[in-house]
Amino acid sequence: MSACDIWGYHPSAGYLPGTDIVGYKVEATDGSIGKIDKHSEDVGSSYLVVDTGVWIFGKHVLLPAGTIERIDLIGEKVYVNRTKDQIKDAPEYDEAKQAGESNYLERFGRYYDQPHM
Image (cartoon, rainbow, N blue to C red; front, side, top):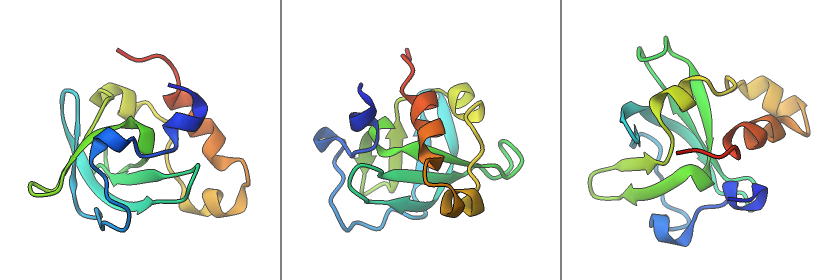
């Protein structure tokens, strides 16, 4: 997966532009990680922000849209192609830093663009 691909919704994922997926549950390859708190459809920088709740003490994590394998619109679940540990070890999402730093998403791109199993 190239850096460009990681920030876009894959056609096979089943995402329909304009769909509000806030509140959908997020499933890693090995279990549930939380609910979508916000999402972006910006071309070239689409992502999800997931509230992990008590799983990792209320941490918010950012997942590039390219990590989404499929979206179940009826069951309101989003399935991503990363494990719970890969997501837990990701850089923490900070909305204030995102607004103030032009290259903020690059750290997430570098982290998630690593080969994964």
